[in-house]
Each structure stands twice: as C-alpha cells, then as structure tokens.
Image (cartoon, rainbow, N blue to C red; front, side):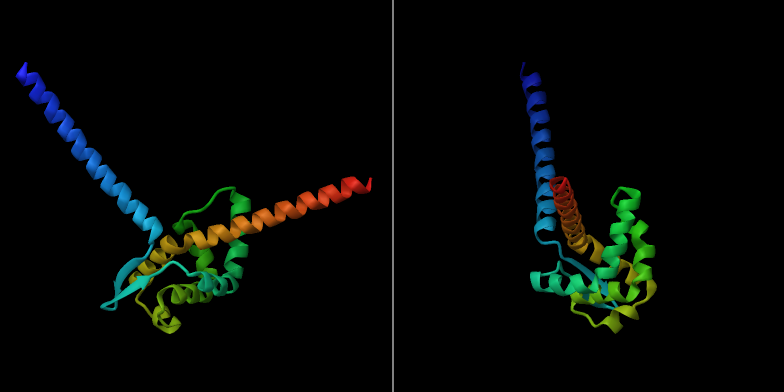
Length: 162
C-alpha cells in the first residue's frame, strides 16, 4: 500500500511543479501585456521599445494615418488580421512614417534608426510591432465602429424619410 501512496504522491508533486511552471509562464505573459516594453542591444547600446503613452498615441495617430488607411483596406480585403511578415511591404511603402513611429516609441533620433544595419533594423521594427500593434488595432476598431455607426444612422434617416 505504501508503494501506491508514494507513487500517487510523486505524481501529485510532479503535477504541482508543472502547475507552478505554468503559473509562472502565465504571470510572465500577464506582465508582458501590462508592461509590454522590449529591450534590444543595437549598435552596442540598450534600446527600450515602449508602448505609446496617451500623448504619444495622439501624435502617433497623425503620423500613422497613411499606414492605418492602407492597413484598414488590407483587412477589409483579406477579412483577417495579418502577421508582421505580411505587413512588411506595407511598412516599406510608408518607411519614413514607420521609422518616425519607432523613433517615438524608443526616444531615438529618426536618422539613428534609419541608418541601423539591416538585421538590427529588422529586430527593432519587429519589437516595435509586438509592443505597439495594439495602437494600430484600437484605431482600426474605432474607425470601423464609426463607419458602422454612420451607416446605421444613414439607413435610419433614409427609412424615416419614406
């Protein structure tokens, strides 16, 4: 009997350890959501990519207009959200605006970012997207809600007129 008890206890302890590891990963994921900063070493210096503050998001909204317009069209056409590799061409077409947004999120000068070696620039661009993709998503959602509200109001006005 004691052998069965020991085996059961070992299995339970193993499950408890797994649960602890899973809880730790869940906590790390929660922290990444709450504090989505990323640190990279670029040109030998540590660069922090921050999520936009409210004020920065207001400035970023103006800079990002052409990206948001094209991103909205892309989502309407494909019906899904795209992954970063799918979006690289879009960002390339709006390279200066994308670099300005990265500069805003890092506090680094635009020219410093623009002249990074390709591999480091790619790492920085990807980190920026991971940290600030929510900025783009929220604006596209607000735009879609506005369009739906306007369409509903227009349909109501047209039906009332008849």
